[in-house]
Amino acid sequence: MGDWSYLSGLLDKVQSHSTVVGKIWMSVLFLFRMLVLGAAADSVWGDENSDFFCNNQEPGCKHACYDWMFPMSYIRYWVLQIIFVSMPTLIYLGHAVHVIHREKRLREHLQNQTKENLFLKKPKYTDSRGKIKIKGVLLRSYIAQLVFKILLEVGFGVGQFYLFGSIFMVSYFHCKQIPPCARSSGAECFISRPTEKTIFIIFMLVVAAVSVLLNIVEIIYLLCARHKEAKKESTAQHRLASLQQFSPSPSSPAWAANVTSRQGRPPLFPPQGPVGISNDENCICLVNKEKHP
Image 1: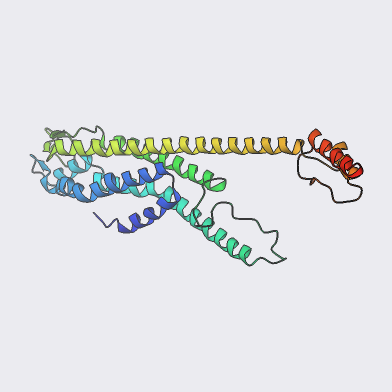
Image 2: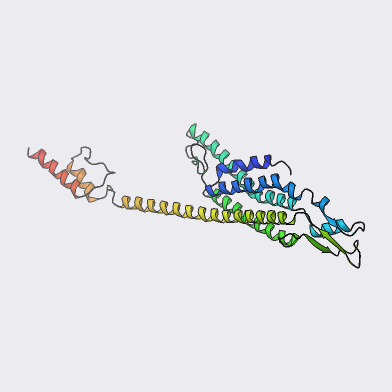
């Protein structure tokens, strides 16, 4: 197995820009796929070609039967699966880093604010600490990479059945690759450690299914969080509209009475405060006190 350090370093950067479910998916990828492949896969499949035995000694028969049984190495297939499944996450990482860099420059312009950049847009996707907020374009990008990961996981799972057939490894099989095997009888071929390989195949399929389930849960989590946030914004706008409906305006009778009673002096009650009957009564009361001590 090759060195996973470079890919692991890139995926580790995504954790700071992911949700809680996304961090769990990353842990499953690191521990149950990369680590297991690197630690146990070589010992299970590393000697497969050398331990593969056929009872036919005709030249080329063993290699033809091995190629028929294993069109591709399981290890290389799973390595390709991990790389392809990680690609949408790495593309999202590039998008998130671009957004962070752009909004960092925008904050620097806002700190050196002049008359020319008074109308610059405020940072939308990051806070003052540079922590990213998954919404808007980033939310769509995040959900898109989750959908692509689900499709790739399912595609590789289906492809495994088409390439290798049943997930249960047999101890021996009858090979009829003619030529180069004998035309009359073919060859009986034997596979080493079939039970261990079957357990390993089932384990990798279960981990892939868990990854798909986590991606689906993360999509539901993001959509529910977005719906909750939109509901909060709608409630806040409704409350603001209700407050503005009862705020005073210069054309209101209560405001005019307040200004007239003060006889050119500054109004007793600011325009921003609510005006009601109590305000009018206070004004009248104060005026009467001035006229009749």
